[in-house]
Length: 285
Image 1 (cartoon, rainbow, N blue to C red):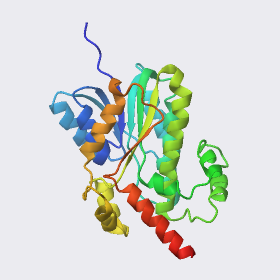
Image 2: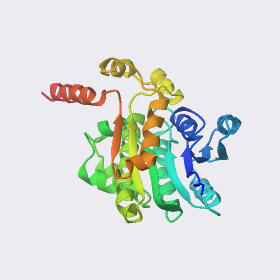
Image 3: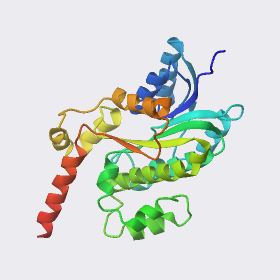
Image 4: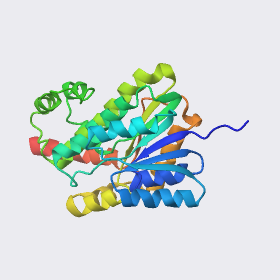
């Protein structure tokens, strides 16, 4: 008896990490790909179909709650899902702070909520966070982390601003780090909530990865060269390296892994944090 290949949703599939994940899973899964970039999404789907893969592709803007819910309703109307890799998002210099939080944090929360009840037992969900979440964790208070558990509350904006007093959330880097830490918090909460169904939820926090988004950031943010130089491996990571990790977390080889974050940064986070702490101590003395 042939076993059906798992149905896996990959968001942000038109480029970068999302595309690499789609290409990695193309021969082992029935893919549902989504992205706001319709042209790029179609190109990826066409390439996978040419190679004999099974793929459905639908556009979705993760800044729009109605589109997220419609996407999930459409793809689960006749069959449940076996997995998710949520890679859709925007970088620190690609949008306003409000839009960064809307897409990267609220969009993730809405997606997880919409997927409640439409995933099979023993499904696996992988959310792409960021190395930036570790930098944000340095200044986020326990109150802020608690607030991040429910970003869909009507008063979320007011509460998180108050909890982050002293930090300028109008800065893209601060908003981005906050949002990506929020993704990790949401994953941890979902892992506990869904564990009794055998559903696993994990995050991946990439460092500097060779993607269109990171190339955009390199042109607009200072410090990218310094981060590369401080990276023990001395290079940027490749999208395919993140895709390999995502495929592992989706697989039965990771059947006892949940509520975990996999930091894939070439070793750069620890020295960067040490440098930041040293600079903070110098400025305060």
